[in-house]
Image (tube, rainbow, N blue to C red; front, top):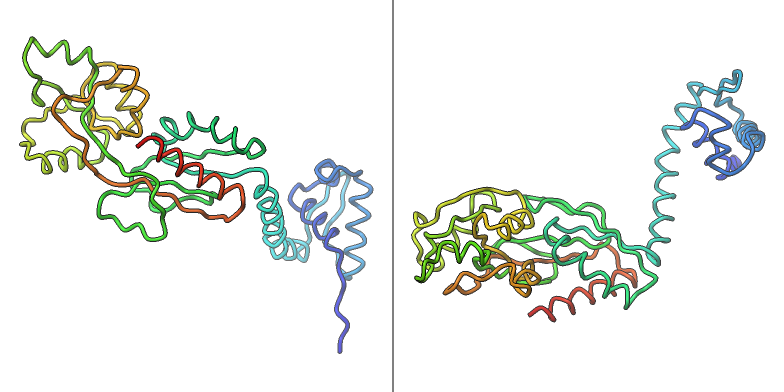
Length: 292
């Protein structure tokens, strides 16, 4: 049986860094060693394999054809090892959470202090994106996304029901009231969903003619529309979990005579089963129950 070459994996890693940086000095700085130590590791690897990976010049190195081929084959494997090691480290110290922009800004981030009290050693990295048609969650430990009523949500755990009702600035209400009961037609509506599907569902649910609505402005997120609503630009069909702060302070009021109705759900999926992730998901569930 032919004896297999036993190659130093540390030397292979050094080779990959030199190939990537194109410099013994830069590779040494990244590794925290001298350029001489880097050169020694490269020579050792080339002697073990009986090949030359680099052409050496004055303070420069360039890959030979054999070196380029070897780098193309080993670089992905080294990257996988480094990512796996990083994931093991983050399991105990850091979790990444992906959520829609509005949910992150209006609920998740303002609530994180309470999670820190429970788990002071865990760092949370929040990543956001628009809710509009996100087909998949990026590589995060926890993904939170919105599902419209009837949309398939297999593999996703329920976080909260999305209950919406029209909200409006009290300044705008007072401006258009004139001593009589306010009607939907008296207040301009603000768009924050593609095609106004939420307003259409609201009209269908409560038997309101869509023609009664007049739209003033359009926004790409709930958060932006709610800022416009507070400024008195119109009414928003807003999720209750995203407007608790404004309704409590009086910055927004529920349009009189209209009850919340369900348009969908917020759900989450764990892409990691680390202790920190389980703690975070349990904390989210508790936070949402306290909002009910």
